[in-house]
Length: 83
Image 1 (tube, rainbow, N blue to C red):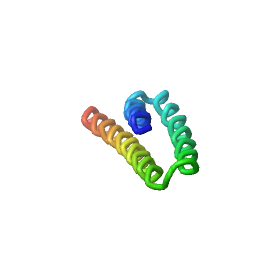
Image 2: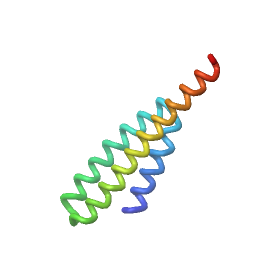
Image 3: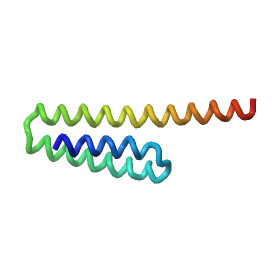
C-alpha cells in the first residue's frame, strides 16, 4: 500500500510539469486518493489512515508549490524579456 501511495505521489509530481493534461491527471488522482483514504479509514486502523493522510497532504502541498514556482518563473521570464 505504501508503494502505491509513493507511485501516486510520483505521478502527481510528474503531472505538474505536463500542463493542461497534467491538471486533469491531478484532478483524477485527488478524487482517487480521497476515495482510497475513505475506504482505508473504514477498514483499517487509525494510525495507518493518519500516515496516508499526511502523505496525501504533503503531495498536495508540493503540487501547489510547484505550480506557484512555475508562475513565478514565467513572470521572471516575461519581465526579463520585456525589460
